[in-house]
Image 1 (tube, rainbow, N blue to C red):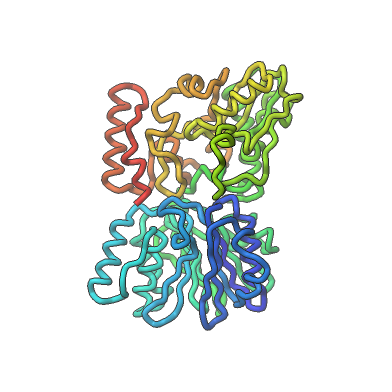
Image 2: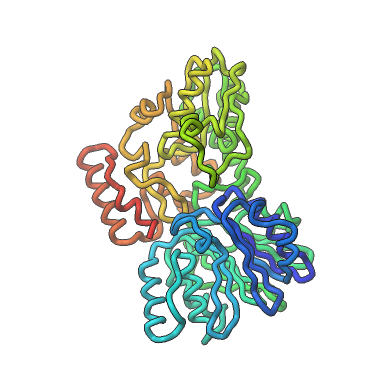
Length: 483
């Protein structure tokens, strides 16, 4: 997400470059909404930022404020209608564009609110198909009486889950972050304006100076009168620890901590917790690189590049043929045979979710001549689904969900396997454990889940307690974040 209020600047181009810096956070769709003070115009489409926008399109989006978004879906299908920013016309005729990072857990209640408004003859037909749409619908429906800013102050305390928002009408840019601050959101200063973005790296690319993080439970408003802040809820910080592991760029800073420095520290801790006798440490690029450097530093084993990544392979709309599909991981990674042949390798990756990538990778390295493959993971085992904005597999699909350490090792075919501990990961972030959400690792969800998801979690905990081991069978609850 990226938002800018900067009269006299080419805000659409600033937003384009801001989104370009945030492309890693979503590759399904991209969109920009721009206001010139009289109307809000939204342009969005499926694809990467560079595929959706060209010079001609950006030049036509003129105004003084903009909201941009790159989509990574956790609710709703990959369709043009679900691309963001979402848009509604309010009862007073003004436009409302909104970008949302996160995932809500009380969409059923919010949908009931929307239906009740429609039932009273308030705001036309319900068109919302995602949780982001529901927020937009409710803001548009309630802002007619009290204005958009007050509508947000009244609505957001009733919105439960993870949400970092950037939204606007014709005159004002708004930014808000849920009371737990699960997803990141930062404020930056331009010479002639203000910027909000999901990561500090996006501020850097547009030449904005970092001011501070948007606080959990805070609503910012930026217009011709300057910047003003209000609170819609008391802060209860629970930032997502997986941002440090994978989601954020290494050149981003979160809570004053360099993500790259945190990942290198994780690697050093991993070397201390799970040492290996080996000849070479190699990363799975790019997200495993800082931790691999740290592992090499901590272990004294030389660091090298054993895998080459195709930088242009991400999520694609072009489906490979069966022959190419069977090549699997080789579409993204290829081994440097002369580097790894005859070597005992430590392979450092950021995480294991389903295990398919690591399984194929270990096989590929052995075929390329590696004598031993010792896998080290810069996060604890992912054993629980995320309900707050990461599209992890359902409980039954998580390879660590029903297997112990040796079971996962056998599943991926490694000679040895080690994960960094939760304590080691938290220490590397330099944040108190009380301020972090690690639910995907420990099952402790800081925001109450829907009742049926909670029921599934409690049933699973009973199975774990009875059998003394993690068990599968969480598929129904794991699908709860797909309303």
